[in-house]
Amino acid sequence: MRILDHVAAQGSADVTQLSRLLGVSPATVRRDLRHLSDQRLLERTHGGALPGGLSIELPLQHRADQRSPQKQAIARAAADLVPEGAVVGLTGGSTTTEVARILADRGPVTLVTNAVNIAAALVLRPTVDLIVIGGTARSESYELVGPIAEKTLADHHTDIAFLGVDGISAAHGCTTHDQLEAATDRAFARHSGRTVVVADHSKIGRTTFAKICPAADVHCLVTDAAAPAEHLDAIASTGVAVTVVQG
Image (tube, rainbow, N blue to C red; front, top):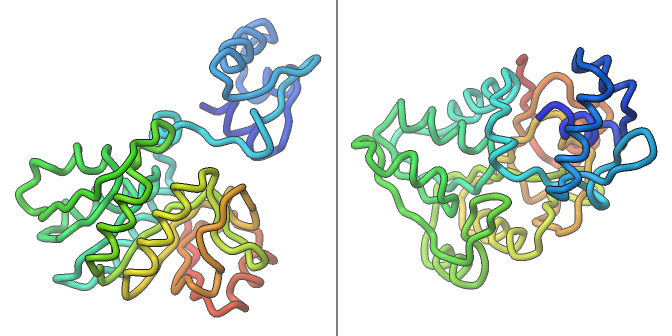
């Protein structure tokens, strides 16, 4: 939803601003803000809204609807990094879901994932050899996380793993909102030959609650051209190969 996107990106928004952005009346904006506040997706203020917490985490059903040209371009560039015959790890997220779709269409491919939405979409695809990592389900991200997932990943090896993150910066590395999710994502990276972060510009230079890994543990970052150049330069200085796509 554009309201959630705007509030998350700007840190706040007022009714007048949102009314102009969306081309709707202030009354419509106020009604939408009440609805989103009731869902605890944002915090109402006098005349506007703030993110619902220190850093908003949009449930995946909102993020998945945002199949923006940037995310699709990122996914295409990321899929091009996968050699024929590779075993591919995929965490949850809207951009990693796009990567999975592209790889399945290209097939044949072996995919290892903890994302139940990816598994459900690809389980009947004859070109996909699908391995689903078990664990405790997170409704926000449709991921299976926790000790069961980490133990399963420790017993396997992927050639390349794609991580969806909520933030990446040179100073704080890759971060997400949930501690269990961070530990599971870290296991994906630890047991893969190559780790690739797929993240649109809104995640670059951002830091959220739980640390996945230092930036230096990432082999490649694929993002879009709207990402802040100063943050990309800082991330590249840690040894990360940065690929910028036009969306």
